[in-house]
Length: 415
Image 1 (cartoon, rainbow, N blue to C red):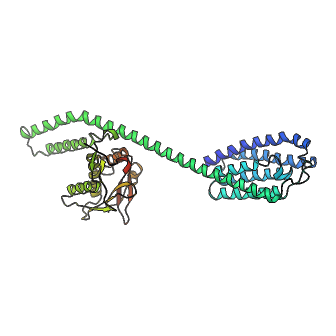
Image 2 (cartoon, helix red, strand yellow):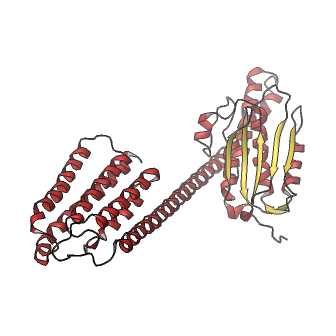
Image 3 (cartoon, rainbow, N blue to C red):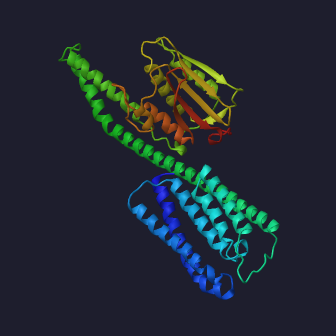
């Protein structure tokens, strides 16, 4: 429990305690008149209520003093509340007091505000309190004898307290899980919006620069054929820079991966990955493919975008192993209701900067990189309702895994 959460819970407890204090003071006179409180015990009763008020003031000062707040402090406060309520009930009829069901409020509060061992400790304390008010009450004048046997009252109250605590605990955990899922969905939506905005920006920049860059290339080629020596170092460097700019622009064009704009095709995933790996393997670099599980049935997939994303991952893996003879390992796994394509290398692993900023375009740790390879693969995964995972390889190295749920692109009939 964070300090902010503890402060929130303590604020709630102090407010509820003020309500309880006012309520206890309001019933003192009726309790005396109806015989539910012995006048001889009035001082003790008011002392307990005054103690609760002092506890509220002390809690308020503690919170203003910016002292350490934790879940254990919440447990202590709840325990003091249970002890105070137990004392008041012991003075006024115990489990047979009409206000005895207030104990069950604490069963719900303990399940809502505490977790783990602290919540279990609280319900155990509550059961002890129920045993006390059932076995050791001071019977008031209005209740000279117990109307219901202890053997009936105690098990019933313990059962009710445990049921309320368990149900509230389950409901609290369920709501927390739903909240976590909603936050994850919101985060994915915001990330998708950023990806689309970055894609639109990249496409716009590419469109604006394509014409002047093409003109520059034509003029450089004309200079190389006529007035200037084609082998001039400055001219060669200028041509290489222009070619690199064109390559970057080609990668940037058409990267707005809207789900409705992807061209879907029926493909066999393992066969497509094998074809991409075979085409990529050249110039001393190779990719070894391994298919896990039973053969994967044909599915509907954006083959072109998928191929480009896989090529980017293969390039990244090869660049992470400069001068090494080891091949890039590729694994296709269709088990568990999802398609997982993992590309592994034996390089130095993923830099923290890349892990923390996955999905951000133009972010790279390479001197000559564009930062678009992982961005494109991540954008494709998000567009298909999946994820791109950056993992550590056992024994050293990095793994980039495209994980796509089958329900996002089920088999269909295409023309």
